[in-house]
Length: 436
Image (cartoon, rainbow, N blue to C red):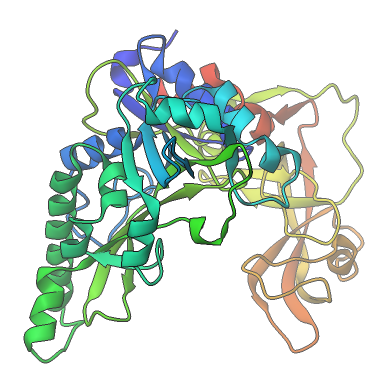
């Protein structure tokens, strides 16, 4: 068992497979007396934790709560009240979506058919229970008057002076909303001062400029309700996500914005949930990253391969952070290399000089894609492995890259645990976290 006291009181869990494994791991961390975090927990953590001293800096190994987005167990519902009025209801950790089963039932339409991107549904009877307070205290905002006050509701950044009066934002942020907005405003003002001190901003002082500094654009209240017709007998439902800080410019502002958003969560969106143990939240620890742990602890993650002899395929090579050579897990088709280690290389020798190869498989994306046969065609006969070297070159019809051939030997008796397997091994990942 891990010593929970060393891991902090709240930890964020991301999983490539989305909500369900993220929830399961966050819930396991929280324990029976804890819970999976809501927007209120993020607000508490950000108020208790200063961002990095340089506000446009970011340390991925030790992010602050301002540096990451979080999916939360705060839910928002849109439906027709008992009195026949369209209302928004915000519920922090209570109600039909307060459990994993409740979330799955609500998002069933999106889960069964990913073409649907319009959130979840709950029966109108459940909506009325929320309205009446049967689940506990909720925030309620009459929808139509709110929408009429905004030409484009739920779109665009709000300056801090407007954020303080926005009823939907106040309901989403909860009891400490004004305190949070004040705090965010001060950080945004300090961000501008840092930029100005670095001589990156050269603007003429005038009344509009002073206004932008005093009331910076800090938050976007996002949703897509204006484009949705309510189903008969049902209410729309979403979980809420709160975004990380981004640095951008608003079209109406002359200074850069240190801003965030709070938005409705679609089922196919990335998911980072917070496990919160009993007690208050004074920060959010970075959760386990299966890839980082695999690269760091590879010596303890080798397991018997069950192979009597080494594979005869041509291997793609990679190096660990400690410069140890490994073969990569083979890719399938004309795609990017996996960069996931598999077999330990026990000897390595260059075969020939780097050679250019050309591919028609790539297209304008950040990762270089190619078919293996395109690289193999230029390798010397004695090479049984290769690595890509240098930067890919993009052409008008064909792209190219350099490839270096090698002659290697591997330890085929052992192979590394697959990253996707480690990502689902909560106990092992937490043991690594504890040892750090």
